[in-house]
Image (cartoon, rainbow, N blue to C red):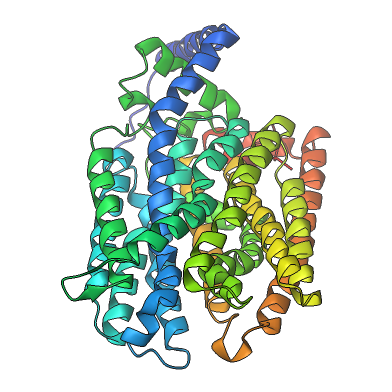
Length: 496
């Protein structure tokens, strides 16, 4: 068939019409952006009140259900299930196999299944699994239950990061991540108190540790069902925002991700392998993933083995549960403080360096002293240091990837890669090393040194790349299709 060509006048009219439409759209966006700062603050507060409490509860339940096996261990789990040698450590590590494998695929489908339904569905499933862990009678049953727990919990953290990025500008993210992530150290405090009470129950042939799983799992399941009715999918589905507030929210998100505006529309953007390739080509993805890997080695070993470390100082099981509360509560406050200033200063890497340095002090105290008081004091430094790093590194990568599917791929991979640290963390504290656990403390100390080195490289790279863009050395990219540049756009600046 012969090629059909429009007459030149028709082409001119079509181009003119498109140019006018684009101009009108830009004027509309500019008009929307020229709003009262008080209105912008009101929109953010609305999002905070209607989104963050649910995410806080989700992560609180998640970390309790993930780490309550550590509380169950000192209340008879290993004896009742006849766990010998490294069997307990194996039951810990199997959790992370499906957890890691599901992270990226889960982030690809979260928008398709609607985040307001998908995230609560995951909560309900792992709550049921956690509940039925109390019926476990063997090592094999424990391993299977932990695998399913990892499968359903795997998509949660990267999904929450992507979900928050649908509502908040880049440099408002760390504080919001901190507000939900502080539930992780708080879960250690709350979980310790709850476990100390639940472990006293003896009923129906199930004594002590099963009731930790029964009650905590049931609470999680009910909470997930409630979340189904209150969590919005994205700003367009947020009933608590007016139509004008929805437009302002979307316009500010488009402005915030310079150069990604054409594809930043959450409703219209479609999956494309181009975005996947762009995510994996980003140096920020690899540097932040590696840095978080090194941070998660001490964080996971601390979360799982804190009761074991404290008990090795000479305390009873009940006192151990109670003494696990203060370090975790202290780190809860530190997460809130550090994320607030991280957003205020628009810095992520320096916060990670500070946190890693504080945690190193704690491990040095645990290694160098033979005093139970000094060693217990070291757990405070470890808790405060390692927990403030995770919100910073999650926000750091999310800030430096755009648009949605690039961020979804990158965040999913970051969580998957970093969680490989669990294969190290779950074997850092072995029974044969009790009571001093020199090997475990030394491994964690070394991991924090490597984290500082990696973060420093990330900071230097982002400063170098921003400098090139400031000098116009990336302007040649403007000749490409700008709707597909994302974070590679010359006007886009990386967060340090």
